[in-house]
Image 1 (tube, rainbow, N blue to C red):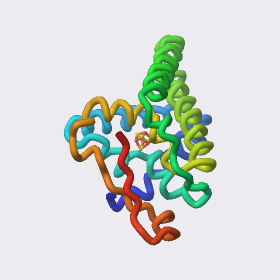
Image 2: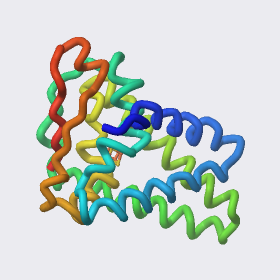
Image 3: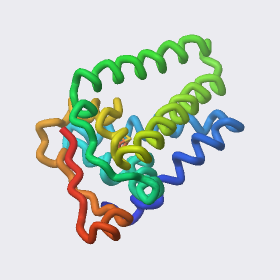
Image 4: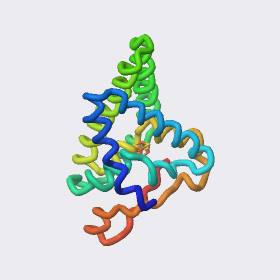
Amino acid sequence: MLKITPYLGIMVLIVSIGGIFYPRLGYFLLLVFAGLMIIAPFRGRWFCGNLCPRGSFVDFWLAPLSRKLRIPPLFRSMWLRAPIFVALMGFMVFRIIQTEGIVDKIGMVFVTLCILTTSIAILFGVIIAPRAWCSFCPMGTLQRAMGGKNTSSKWTLRNASIAASARRSVQCSFP
Ligand code: SF4
């Protein structure tokens, strides 16, 4: 974990809420996409544990509200992950095509995507576990495809809130 990791979660709120009023904030997602795609071939899912704003959000903001149950194995299954990847990427491309290249409209597509996925992350994060969404997140699936055999794809995350209650570090390793 980097020193900046706990603070990155604020970007999720800035894009999800601020983006409604200023859609160009949605372009921040392109920075996230680029970052993880550059890193994934060399470090697997290192980005997930260190630089992802939503990862930070669920670990440090959502975790205190979570029931912290075991994540169902189905969530890590490709039978679920592949359709979700295709559906969300298809949704994004379809919506972007409809914007006719208007900058603000494209930005709003990313904001909508951020609100949608954050809502799912919050829902499953509260009723199951903070990282439940990360089990089938399309960007996590993409990183796995790009760097899944890299040993660095297994990362350790010291989750402050969980560690405080469990008095141990949490090993987060997603296939
Ligand atoms: S799985 Fe997705 S949301 Fe979770 S940390 Fe990785 S990129 Fe971020």
